[in-house]
Image: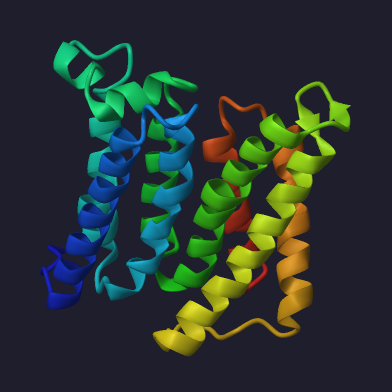
Length: 231
């Protein structure tokens, strides 16, 4: 079956590509003012979830709005034969952390876009857990973390993961069900309790997941778990 590109798909593609390019450009412009521009890309790219509702086809959404970034980002890693790509803004952002972290980010994004296309609220929570939750946890933990409870985890960082994820769930619930009127499923009962439970799971998962693979483990686990619960 060949997916037909609809107006909704076009709107989604323009939104996603325009937004991602804007985030990369912003990180490049601020590279001299930020200690870790890559983390800015990691956090802000999570905003793609606010364009997902526009897509009418999972093949278009996953195949054109997500999967191409896997290949592009892979070509920006140290294994790439293309020096210009390795030295590009994306290549520089990749080299500032785990070399394949952004590749895994895009791979998770692709998988969620395809397999959870009919449950975009859950898919969006999964992306938010990785981008906003995990991203804010690292920022706060490294800058303000004082109370260490694991080798590379702090109480302050884990609280930031919890808080950022909690707020993300509330915002996504408002966006999908109140603002755009997302038709699939419905808003969770006892929203505050739901948001707190998701945030707690994400904080615990982030604490025990090795940093090299957290961009795969966190979103795929959260998305699969919530979907299995019927959220």
